[in-house]
Image 1 (cartoon, helix red, strand yellow):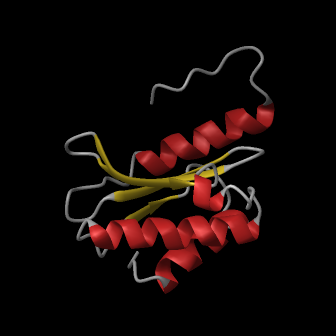
Image 2 (cartoon, rainbow, N blue to C red):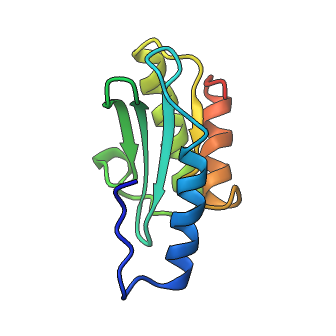
Length: 124
């Protein structure tokens, strides 16, 4: 993992990096079943489909896009990002993914994004 933990990193971030490292040691995305990565900042929410074998991003969606700019990083925004990433994945021919919650708890926005992606047709 290329994440640097410095002196100014908060204890909460250190714990998340520890969880992230443990999760990433167990999951791997391929071309047939890419990894759905979620990153959450204070203002926005990001999702990517990553093929780890080629180190290539297949599709991405976030709340910073023009059609989603009105929604912020809340549960409604997470649902919209989940639906959008599922639609883009199906356009690329991807039906199943491996979910990488990025060290965040599977609760709130992360859960809303995953549920919306499932409802839109992705299989985890």
